[in-house]
Each structure stands twice: as C-alpha cells, then as structure tokens.
Length: 210
Image (cartoon, rainbow, N blue to C red):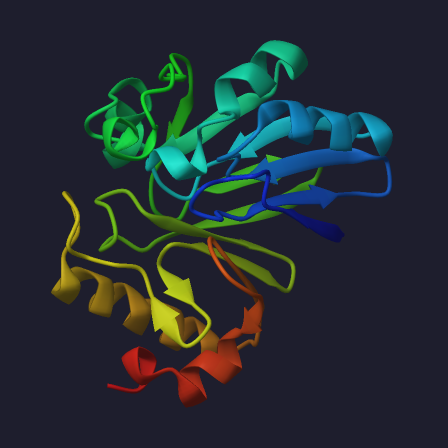
C-alpha cells in the first residue's frame, strides 16, 4: 500500500493522505484544502477515489470534501459524534478559520463507531476511537500505518482548548495508542507536521510518557 501526502494549500497546513493499492484505487484521509489541487493529483496519477475518511470534524480537515465528492462520487466516513460538524460552520470552526469563504458543508456521510472496520477493496482499515481533540476524533490503522489525525503529533498532541476538547479524555486516548504500540510498531501519519512512528512517540513524547 502506497501512501502519498498532500497539504493542499490549507491555511493551517493540515495533511491530506492518499492510500493507493496496486489496482490504482485510492482512499483519502482528510481533505482540508484546495479540492481542485486534490482532483488534479488523483487524475494525474490515474487514481480512482473510493472513500474519504475523516479523522474528525474540524473544517481544516474537510473543507475540500464536498467538491471532491461531486467529482468522484466517493463515500465519506466520520465518527457519529462529529457528524453534525459537517453541516455546521460554527461547530466545525469554519466560521473561525474560513476567512469568510463559502462554507462547503458535507450533507451526506456514513458514520462509524469505535472498533469498526472499513473495507478498502479487501484491505481492512480499523477505526480506533481517540476523543479529546473533538468528541469524535479517531485514528485509522491500515497494515503498518496509523493515521492519527489531531490526536497525536510528532512530539506533541492535539489541542484540547477548543469546543469538544478535553485534556483528560485525550490522555486516555493516548494511553489506548500506547497500549496498541506495546504489540506492534506503526508508521504514524499525523494531521499536521511530519511523519513519525508510534515507538518513537511512546519513548520520547512527554504526553505519552506521563
């Protein structure tokens, strides 16, 4: 499975990831920036986008989703606790970070909960519920890759001072990830900044060591 990283001109530099299989089918994780840049990329690489997975409902992670869905017909997935954020400029913080641009709401999605498995053409993507940054934050695990959204960053974690955030809750979520890391190491693809590994964060990230 090949993973490609895009930033799509997002003002908050949110990462978008594209997982591609040998059949040139793709799943996108968070599309928070320029939808046209995203569509140009998948067209240039002859990819067929099947699904869009959202780690949480903040606008900097789904701004481009609606337009991509119109062009590709891809199915959108989000945790049930963050579903309402996709249609609310206030709850998604679009009214705060959108620079008075038109709010691109996502009016159709499939919800999931903790422990569910999303099928990607025969390859399982496991949902790990990790609230704390928002009430519906999740991580996705596929093969040896962990997409951590805004729960875990390289040497840091997601902020908890926004609506729906809670520090004690995210600490519990980090403990869940730490427990997962006791059995297998994973490449970690965070919602912002650079890639890391779960073993490195368990050893060096102060929030994982507490």
